[in-house]
Amino acid sequence: MFTVISRRVPLTRLVLSRGYTSSVREGSVAQSKGFSKKEKAHEDEYARRHEAELLRKLKAEIEAKKEELARLQEKHDEVNSKQ
Image 1: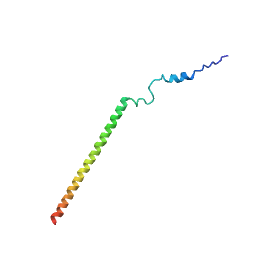
Image 2: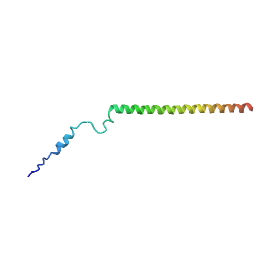
Image 3: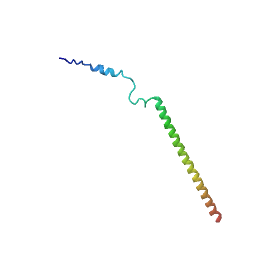
Image 4: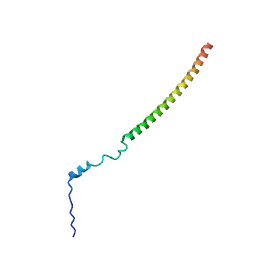
């Protein structure tokens, strides 16, 4: 009846054909310049916000310490004036 003729493809052809595939790989979107610039911008924005928050907290601590120092100075002056 029908005979199946299998044609054998040399292995070198298969390997060489892989070299002709497109340069687009999985995940290449994440490696594109536009994406990395956007990601860097987001990271920079986060860092600026985080640093601004830390700076705000430090300024609040400084103000609290100044108030505490003023109270202690008043107490010190009261004690020295009584003596």
